[in-house]
Image (cartoon, rainbow over all chains, first blue to last red; front, side, top):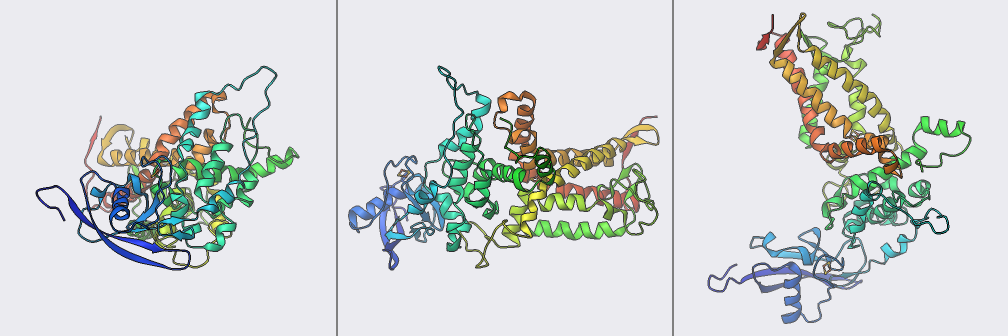
Length: 261
Length: 231
Ligand code: FES
Ligand code: FES
C-alpha cells in the first residue's frame, strides 16, 4: 500500500518466530521506502515492534553470507533482495533455512557445513625446486576463479533436495558448496592429489541428480552444476565407469593415476 | 517442458514405426538416417541384410534416444518433471527415499560419453544428408527442404559439441590446460556451446521432428517442395 504524499509504503511481513523446540509465523506491519531491501524491513521490525527478534547479518553488501533466509519460499540473501521485487498486497513470508536446525527466529545452526568441510582433502601443492616459485598461467587458473566467489551463505546447501528432504543423506552427501570446493582443488594447477575416489565414496557426488536448484539460488552467480559438479562427475566416470579407460589402466597394471599432469 | 517432451516422444514413436514416406528425393528423414538395412527406400550404407524386417529407423533410433536420455540437461528435465525429485526448487520430493544416481538403474547414466561418441558419428552422417539435400539428380539446387536439413545439421552439431562429456574429453579433464593449446581452444569452444546446451537440446529436438514431418508431407504429396535447381 502506497501513501501518495510521502512515497512510503506499508508491508505486511509473516516472520517465523521460535526456537529449536517450536515456532510459528507472526505477522507485522511496517513501513518501507523505495530502494530498501528485505533486511532493512526486518531491522525495522526489530527496532520498532519486536526487539527480541533474532536475525544474523554482517556486511549488508552480499559479501559475508550471513543473512540467508527463505523469502516467500525461495532461499535468498535478505540484504540483496529488494522490496520492489514483491509488488503486491499479500504478506511477505520470511522463514529460516529449512535444511538446518532452527536456533532462534531467523537464525539456524549451520554447523553441518563446517563439520563436513574437512572431508574434502586439502590442496596438495607440487613440490618446487629450491628457489623456484610456482608460476600459474591464466589458462589454468581462470576456471577456478569462478569458485573463489563463494561467500558460504549455504543457500545452495539449503535448497538442495538431497539434504533438504532426506535427513538421512546428511552423512552420505556433503552438498553443492563442498563439491564446488572439491572442483576448485581438483582443477587447481599446482595441485597433485587425486580426489576422485573420495568424491564418490566419501562426498557422495553420485547423490546429486543435477537438477540445478543450487545454481538457481547462488547469489554469487557460480554455475555450480555445470562448471563444478558435472565436470567432477565426468572425472569420477573416468575413474570408475569408463570400461575402456579401466581396461587401459589394467593393462598399464597400475590404477589410472588421474588426469595428465 | 514435460508436455513438450511428451509430445515429441509420441510423434517420434509414431514416425519410427511408420516405415514409409521417410524419403522424398533428395531428402532423407533424420529419424531414418543412416538407413542401413536392405528394406530401406533409400539406403545410406548396406550394413544390415534382408533379415531385418521391421522399420529401418529402429536400427539407429536407440543412439539419439540413449544420448538424450543420459544427457545431463535432459536428466534434469525428467528428474524434475516425471520423477518429481524435486518437483521444483524448495518443493519437497515426492518420495521419502532417495539415492540419486548412486545405484542401478540411474547409475547407468554414467555411460553418457559412449553415447556421445555414437552421436558424434551420427552428426557426421546427418551433415552428409544435409549436403546431399542440395543434390537434385546431379544438379546443384536449393529447396526449402535443403535449408530445413541444413538447419537440422547445424542444430545437431551445436547440441552435440556442447555436451558435457565432449567438454570434458576435449580438455576439461586436464589439470594443465596451458600445456595443450589446441585442446584448450576446443574446451573453450565447447564451453560456449555448453552454456546454451538446454536451448540447443530443445531446438534440435523440435527441429528433428519438424524435418521428419516436412519430408513426410513432401513424400505423401500433401505439399510440394519449392525448389530452385541450376541446370
Ligand atoms: S549481510 Fe552479508 S551477505 Fe547479507
Ligand atoms: S548431450 Fe547433454 S550433456 Fe551430453
